[in-house]
Length: 378
Image 1 (tube, one colour):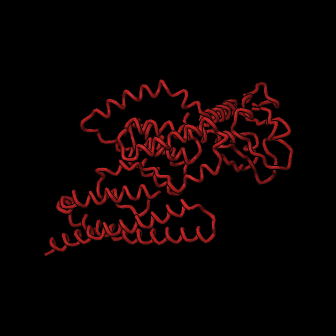
Image 2 (cartoon, one colour):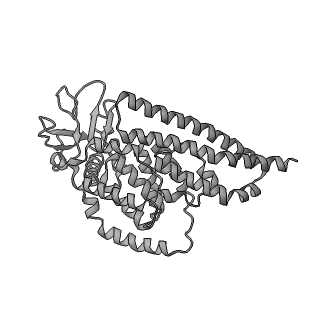
Image 3 (tube, helix red, strand yellow):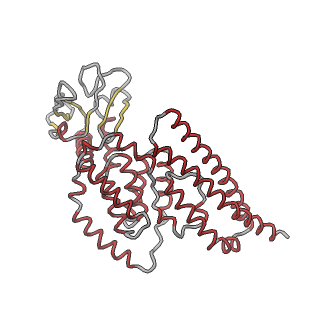
């Protein structure tokens, strides 16, 4: 059970608890714990205190978690543990199904595992096997194309990331890696999103695999530094505060710089990037595509395709102009409110500049497409 699956299982099991069968529940799950509330009452986990408590994912609270049978009430299976600091009484949750109770326990224990440093310390055998496969993959003179099913998963992951739906993003990356474990961009993306979620052990684990596949990537030095930071946070959870997680917003990207190399021209047509590094890498790749592949693209495209490409480039230019102005406005607002750091302001301004640079790269490309179309219509 990977981390996204554990979270989904926890949500589903909580909904099927005895409280969930009586009331529509509002369940909130983060990497720090879970909270259950419902409209009719402020009770939490069967206690009668008029407060809303959060059950935390840590071994101090949940080390005694287990399914008890026979149940406290006939026909019900219970999970209970002692909460010294969180609740004044024992946590008791009940299910009509023994399987649901066990799924709850299993998911919580998996999440505790992933939030510890154990995924890294237990990784040696699996990583040794991965190293052998990665070595063979790197030795290939021509890499096999990724399975077609990977592309929609990568697109969905990137869209979810930009929408800040990080749970969905990491789920898509994990699905893709289950299909193709030797997918560099998948490991890179999963690492970045796990870092954003605060699951530092898995962030470091995936970055380790990305570097094994792409040891000479342009961003390898920065990736090794980030992997070291995540590893230390996994080993010292107390030092990984919510501020640490949110501070990564400014520099986070789910696309490695190397993934743009040799990319088709159409894939590089984007009007929004997660960070300046990603924007600059896309600009360089777009410039290379303009110099190397644009003539053949113009020659091979059908008239209808050229018309569609003209419309798309024009729209991207309009969107880039809007995104550039938006980034500048946001930077100014942050300065005026004093609500962000200098790094955040600098990142926003760098994005604005990168978007303007991309417009200048696209203008001659658009002119060349229109010229080709005009010549064909003569």
